[in-house]
Image (cartoon, rainbow, N blue to C red):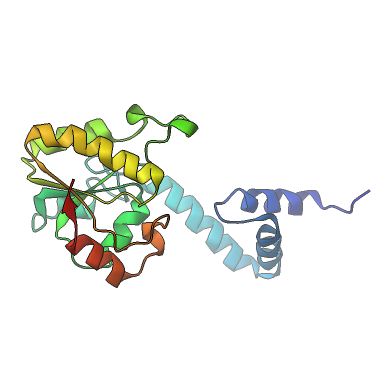
Length: 199
């Protein structure tokens, strides 16, 4: 019989469910938490609880926010006629770090993936099309990741956007194929935005 402490195993299992955390990393984190003083552990638990209770999706762009609309959508100094479409909220953070984009964002909350059963109705595409008409958008920059699903989503969106008389552009390929926006540096992302091309 393998020695096992049930409450510790429950913590390891919970940590292992987090993205990018393998079984060994989950064990290391669990033991780190056990060694940490009680106040720090309570602070961590409270921070997780507060984030889960107070953070929601912006009703306009679907980015994460603690008030609605988010600060980007509410900012009148941003160019609301230019929308940058991204897959996930962390992509907005990555692009904002470049300080090169002055428009607004639209978060799809995923990409088209027939293998995983994710179709157009599972993404925030209808909301994007509604925004394009309502805000008299002149350009949509599609900044999905340069992988198979991201490319398929970009092509699908461009076919929907072009008939509306709106310029549809794709960020330039300053990013390595198969990578994710969240791991790219600010200079690479900035150049990718500057070198975008119409699709």
